[in-house]
Length: 225
Image 1 (tube, rainbow, N blue to C red):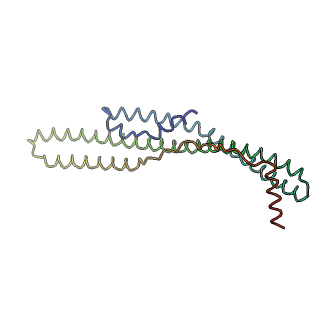
Image 2: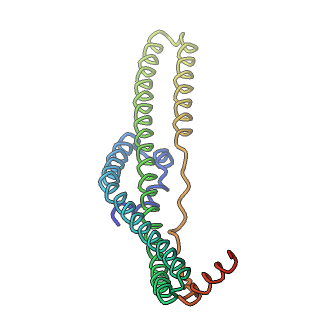
Image 3: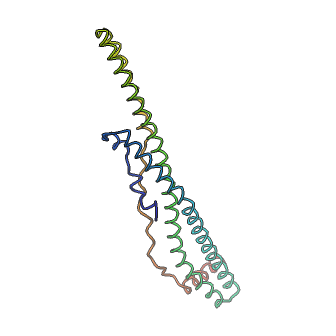
């Protein structure tokens, strides 16, 4: 089913853990960014059809349930009029539609779950892109700071090393700012729980038939007298 087949892989991905182990973080970030943007494009392209399927299955289910209610009403009116033959026909149609309703409900449950999965994937991918951009900015900042430190070290060496305390304080501040930025990025990267497996279809068949339905209506009318 397109991008939906990769739902678990996308939701379980932890790019921060992989980036921490990367030998070339800058190149790894660029690769991640490219792949995540491709996945996000696929999610957006397929979301419209998934949502349309959800609306279609819901509309079909609602129509079936409305027809079942209407047949029940007709059967009750027929019994009140003393026409059990017509009541039985209405109830027979109702029994058939009740069986059909189960399949329609299962189809809607699947479509609804697919729509929710698409939303989760889109949110996860957008979050991943934000984190990747933050990590890339942090990496560039740390690399720039490292170059500055190297120049300061060179100057310090030329001066005879008399400015070690100043250089150490500057290095400590750079590292502290970097660690704080990493902590903020990790707090923003909250995991979403995987969804449970697709709803199981109810396999129980109806034990009621038209005669049972007719008897129920008669009993109801006796109690109302």
